[in-house]
Length: 206
Image (tube, rainbow, N blue to C red; front, side, top):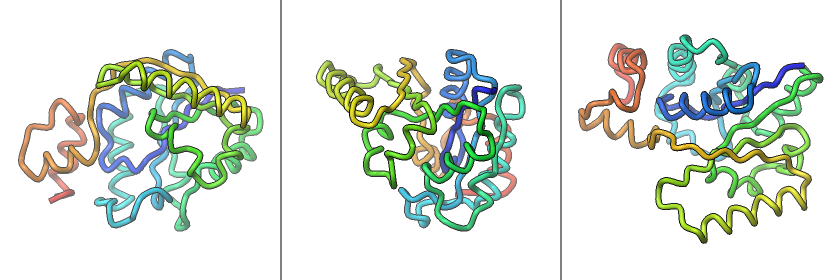
């Protein structure tokens, strides 16, 4: 039986914040691996807002994680033409790997919106939610109370298993990074060199 973390997203592009977050979870929970799972058609995003082609996003993930022994690329969602729903992906993964434990890694924003996802009630029995609570950026006492109340609601009403980790993660977002590329700003603090070189070579985001 393996303990497997799932990092899903568009990764448009993958950045150091993604890698740092996954590394915290990998080490804190002593996972056997973290699977980075780029998606082609996420339900929560307009595809017009996904700037780069799925093949480029997959290749960038592969480049970014190659020096992390516990990180693996999964093309489980990116190879599908239909919309990727978290509950469906987890159902299929659990069928393929019935003896493994899955840990679905998300941020606080995703946690607060999870009840608006398709069939959230099917997600909770299939994976432990691992939530990274970044309290360094304007997090108030009221935010903490609201957060704790919501976690308790999910545990009580849905039987959710939730692990909360507190870490300061590089404050990067793919949208902000794409804007920086357009304005010619230095990306060294936010992107691995391999990703900067790949973006330059293939003229992505130009």
